[in-house]
Length: 345
Image (cartoon, rainbow, N blue to C red):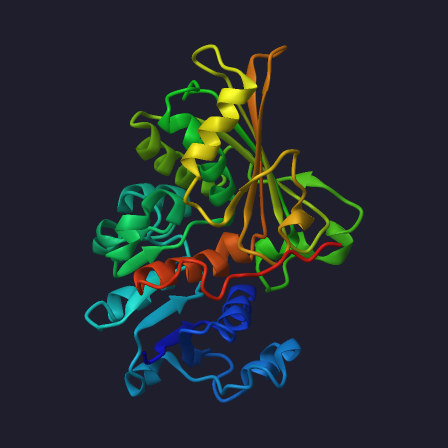
């Protein structure tokens, strides 16, 4: 079988480099083009020197896309830019996996309220499938446009989905407390990710209005079949990559530890990248992999269900999950190219 030809649109960021790093060893695809408007003509390894001798492909402009017969493109573009690409190339034959937030929400109005950007292609919102393989595998198989989930939402949704589908928790008082490494802020220098602000420091940000709140809430509304209300607070850790999310929810009926763990085991029985842990996991347990490690327990004293969810934000939270979606769209083994072992320590 001929290898599928892949385009990566936007190469200068962390997500672009992770896509290239993983896809370089994928047995069923080849990277046909990598774009960068600011670095066109340079080698990819000039932008990301750690890939010298491994990925020395020349970067090209988006305007050259007609020179390539592509089966699928990954959009590693900022919010507000991806929608321009999708609208411009909507009639092309290639499938699209968008790693921005431009098509994750349920309507143009909700997007504009939370992102404060005019959405120029609402038709794409209607057509896009939310790319959570553990929830929407069959829809992803038939999709032409995938809205790859955000990193924080991946931890929260996977941590809560079994409870909400089973109607085991109250939907109006769910607390999602997340900590992330600085790569979540992107590769461009900002005051927030300066060494002097991050090192030996720890802080909350985006209180009450972080845009991932509505993404989490919208998908969990679908899972539960009713409206959910999520109190989401992200925090910045002085580490480079990884997300740890702790979830607190109150059960609607009597529950015990054994039945809780059976529920999660049944829900994720066919999910190759969800690992149910015997103890609370750490971010180094998944570093460099596409795993989401989950631990769930019940506290009788407070009558609270507690779930801990960890991922590598650049892989399961971005590039790895996108490749997982690509595999499903092409009818490949879901794990192809993603058999990565955690880097620990």
